[in-house]
Length: 342
Image (cartoon, rainbow, N blue to C red; front, side, top):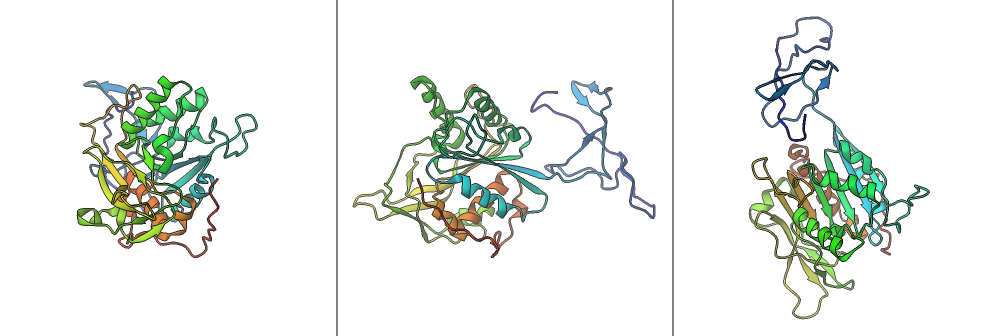
């Protein structure tokens, strides 16, 4: 078996007629899943897998038919400015209300003690969890990862799995030499659609403009009204590649005369298997990518922003139907006091 290879799964179906719950078996009672469904199957460890027409055929066991998988979201908050070690756990708690979804949160740690240390740039916890992640959420800033951590992170980036990026992830890695830094910048541009360019100054804020046009109908923007001012100062990101779809725009509040009118603050891109985008020598670009330049800790006090980030994650993972028509709703029992930036 190879990553991205084709595996054929077949199933016999029959109606269960017993009085008790149906037993575990390969003759499931739900039928074959529809095209595009994601399901969980269980190998019965039979070593007699065969190959027909070059395609592996595996013997697998099904727990009472096909089962929907539990999605695994890995959120990595490792920056030394915007307190992502606090805001990513907040997002994870918000996502806990979504059925069949579990979260793992990784933060910057001291490479020796393994204890959380937001100022450490060389190590991040839970990178090993990326091997089993359905979606990764990256909030990095100038990470100077050690060899094993860097390799684990880059392996995921090239796997084609969905990913969501926040704010400083446009400059997520910092190589030890100018040549390696140039490669890291190019990787960010290929992955997100843009690398770090500039921003409009810490003294400014951003007005999230109301959704407009076809973008207003996108599942990610359900319940997101816009027309609010948040603390994040606006990032310059244009031009974005043509395959990126901008969902929300922002404009500078408090900037000097002549400030550009607006910039994208949320965009997505989606790729099918027939249109892969190589990430240099790192493999394939993600099937679904979503990015937002928002991410100041005070932004997350706005329901629209917390809801938006959660929706980006669900959409990236293919869970569009998990986003209610009026959007995920905040739990009053989720108090949040925004910490200061560093």
